[in-house]
Figure (cartoon, rainbow, N blue to C red):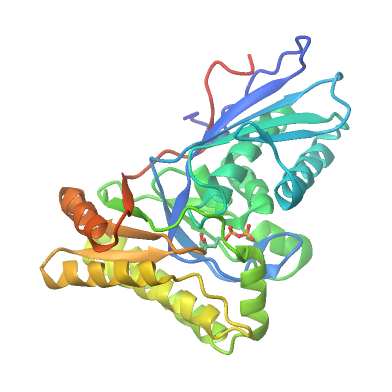
Amino acid sequence: MSTDHRVEQARPSVPVSGRHATAVAHPNIALIKYWGKLDEQLVIPLVDSLSMTLDVFPTTTTVRLGPAIGTDTVTLNGMPAAGEQRRRVIAFLDLVRERAGSTEAADVETRNSVPTGAGLASSASGFAALAVAAAAAYGLDLDRTEMSRLARRGSASASRSLFDGFAICHAGRGSGDAADLSSYAEPVTVPEFDPAMVVAMVDRAPKAVSSRAAMRRTVETSPLYPAWAESSRADLAEIRIALERGDLEAVGEVAERNCLGMHATMLAARPAVRYLSAATLTVLDAVSDLRKSGVPAYATIDAGPNVKILCHRTDAAHVAETIRGSVPGLSTVTAGRGPGARLRPGVGE
Ligand code: DP6
């Protein structure tokens, strides 16, 4: 990592194909959830969130500029992106171009090693990688805070994937530019805390309702939302103390209740948003049984049916095996603390 806290910049060159940069980012899983926006257009969260960046499922994105390219092209896992996915990438490029004073079109090529849109944080790693690669290709010189603010415009959870280990994303305050400036992510330094996260792949299919639409409906119609947002502030204060102490059980308890509270707000939305499937509930039962048997294990669930289980690294194999045994055909991936988004060395030179 560079010592002046700038994201390592590609040294753009202008060969026939134009300037290009490649970045790699990992997903992060929130222990204190972001759910609800203060400003939809600027993608500003209503609540603070705190996450752990994982060391699995990286996204690799190359942004290539060039006079030969007239319109943007967006490729996801070798296939042309379409619909909302394409629209969001191009809107993000427009933002970068506006800041860079450029009108050059780009060719964006992304490879996700995690199923896209299944509540496995693909938009977090996706927009973190896109922010770092696009900023380098278009020659924006941003520090980490500015870069996290830029990534937030793609997806608020992406702001946290800029950092390794644990990160907090601040909710916005005020409105317009002031709100934009107030909402960014920064690292939470807890070198001693090194847990495992077992990802239980309940379902790889894209979710029926996007998290964007679901959180809008929740804020607008759920009578439980204000109470959860309020309790989330206390959860954040408590989890920070628990992280400092390296107390996995306290961290896990707060994370699990914060997540279940978030899903309760969705279930109370009108109409209800329900990401939890029967298999999700079976996994939650297995997690609770693990605790009863003396193994500290705590679940968290995002906008999808998949479950992530926080536990000690020494218990991870046992936790993963128990969880796999709870639902036929279920697979697991065990993750640890992962690195922040960065340019891939040697590319773009
Ligand atoms: C449940 O960051 O994907 O995973 O900002 O609208 O793109 P947008 O939403 P996104 O939502 C993440 C929601 C969550 C909780 C979290 O990661 O904090």
